[in-house]
Image 1 (cartoon, each protein chain N blue to C red):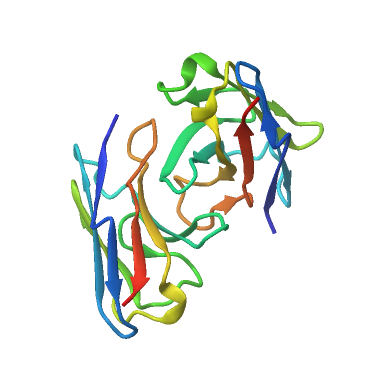
Image 2 (tube, each protein chain N blue to C red):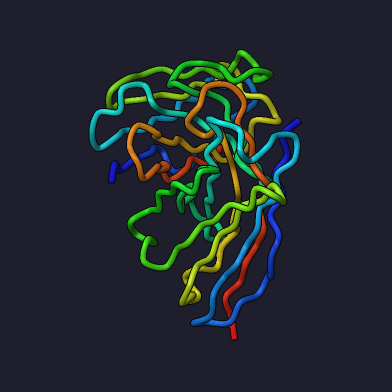
Length: 107
Length: 119
């Protein structure tokens, strides 16, 4: 299985801050990676697919980058509604595997 | 608009079989390119992909669960199902059905169903 190592596991930030979350794959996955946002009691919502393509309807403050084994999700200016948990998902190889998650909390 | 809805018992006895159904609306389950997935999330933890089934019956299960998992498709009712045998407390989780996870564009998830394994 491809292991997805996500960091940090949690972070505290203020509204307006720039936030960066990283996922590292145990082997190359091209750009076959998505980023998801999950709020308590809700299903995950995909923000980014193909490492850097913004899902329709997702604010442009979210962006993704990377290829191969290193990937980044950036929130350029954190908004109150962005406090949530974020996961990466690799879909290059079955079984699909998720990162461990990053909880973004209010400082 | 594509919608998915999980259903099934919220409590299962240890060693018994967990059975869940996902009812799909807004698209035929027989539509090409739609792979029907099950994913679970242990309380307060990350996400674990369980497997997928295609309308043809082709399936792929996570090797970590493969010996206990069976998925099936019911095209007449536009549903697909998950069976997980010999459950233990470690199978307590929120179970989601989802589709279009590996495809560009829209992806769809059910709201999730909490299944507890307890005597």
